[in-house]
Length: 172
Image 1 (cartoon, rainbow, N blue to C red):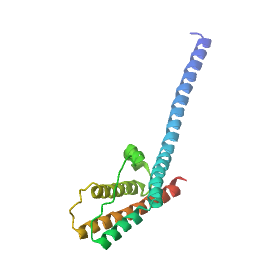
Image 2 (tube, rainbow, N blue to C red; image 1 turned 180 degrees about the vertical axis):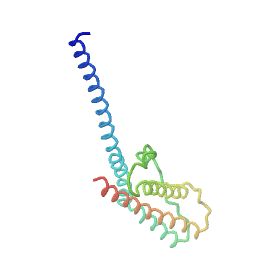
Image 3 (tube, helix red, strand yellow; image 1 turned 135 degrees about the vertical axis):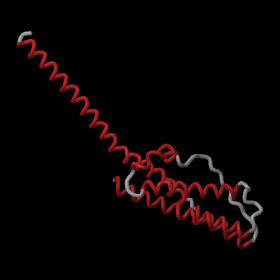
Image 4 (tube, helix red, strand yellow; image 1 turned 90 degrees about the vertical axis):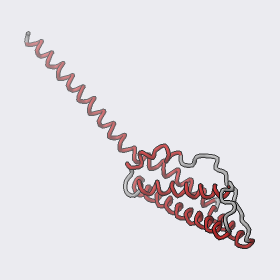
């Protein structure tokens, strides 16, 4: 082998090592950037869904409507079953990302499922009242069911507002 051939071979080997190293470093850096964006993107998506649900519940005054039903039952001593139809899945972001919630910081991995569990409990109670499952309940029990649903709704909305605040602080 001539000195020139050895020199060319060395240049090829060094060039190959540089290409491999730069490809590896680029892949690692891109992966790190993607991993750094993932929690923020997830937090923003969850915040958007929860904020929409909390805002609509407040705008539509669901807690006030339950109070009106309670007052009507108390005034008439007759059962009343508030109609309810659920046409859509209101937890698509959560449902599609539930396995990822743990990557979020602070109390969010605990608070987010608490919000959705509370929402599910309220919707389930209200659906049972609307579909006749609760027909035949004595008036005091029926009132307790409505009051419990109203209390859980209030607690759930407060948890949702806390999730929104926590996301604003952590991921703004």
